[in-house]
Length: 216
Image 1: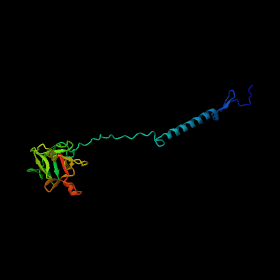
Image 2: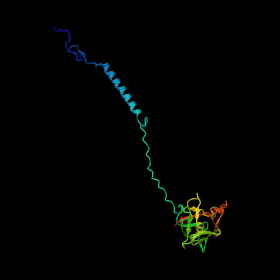
Image 3: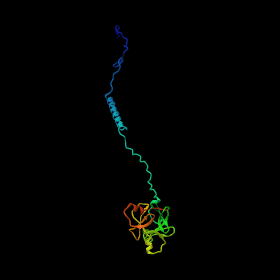
Image 4: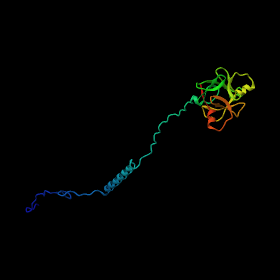
């Protein structure tokens, strides 16, 4: 029965039903503990991963070294020998001396101002040495120690007188010559004339017995 003395209007803030709930206050239900644990683990993973990748950044690790580029090098080309520095041997040669050239003055060898070309051949008395033939066909020889030009007579004396041997260990482009039959005598300039002379240990003698040679 309804009690006439009571106000039977429904409260506006209460929903009736099974286990009625007061909706006038917001619900304060908490997260499940398992969810909280999962969130915490995920946060740790993110932090660890971030630190790992930061450690691999250029500021932390420069990465593998890149070999420096090697500049290409040009092949080394040996310079061709200068004609003035060729090794003395058979052929056509100009023979210089300080102040001029070995040349012909009448029948004698003399210092001349113009180049004279000689034909250098194997020595008439020794093919390891040399003989010098002028354009007129006469050979350079010594006679009474003085150098002159004569036609060969084929004798042993002439061939020996006309044979001269190059001294060892001379700089390229130069030559010093000794007589075949007077091996202790060198071709040597005296003024404007040439002789075979015994060497002296002076710079002047060395200069006057050292010839520059150029192949023609």
